Image (cartoon, rainbow, N blue to C red; front, side, top):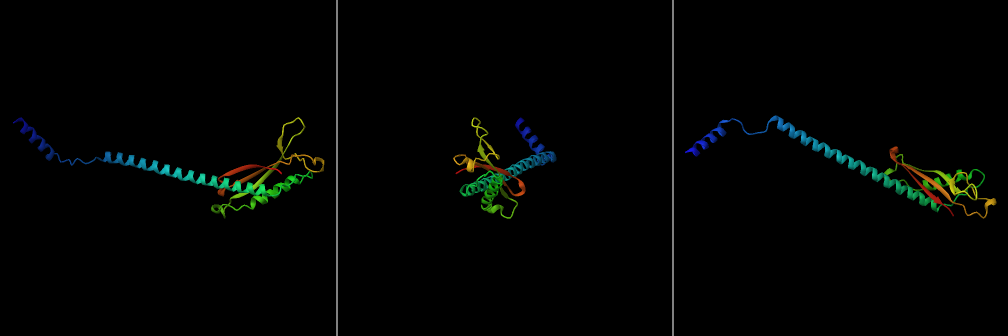
Length: 176
């Protein structure tokens, strides 16, 4: 008989409470806040992946363009430094022309992307006992240096990507 009383009390309590066992407003707000936070974190992660992918693509295109320009300069005729003072300027202009002959990556055509030879330096040393170093002032060519094997040049090439987002430099060595 004791078991009947407890069953009756349980049934009466469930039926007469008037509460439908739903979620309270506080519980719904907490759940929405947590879900919103997860969505925001996911979207930020996706945005970061997209931005880094675009940066990687630009750097790959930049390197490809620099390599192509380096190859064009390599196969072009070496410009002598000549002791008349114009050799370095002439070398920069000639190598820049060779670099400009390389086509702009198709993705960047019609943009502000640019490639340029910015410097030419020569390998030499100030005295017989000194270490070799690069300088725009060394010029061991011409009649006075007919037997000199030092015709090595370091050419600096720069690429600026669209919007000036990336500046990348390549230094190459050119010699006979």
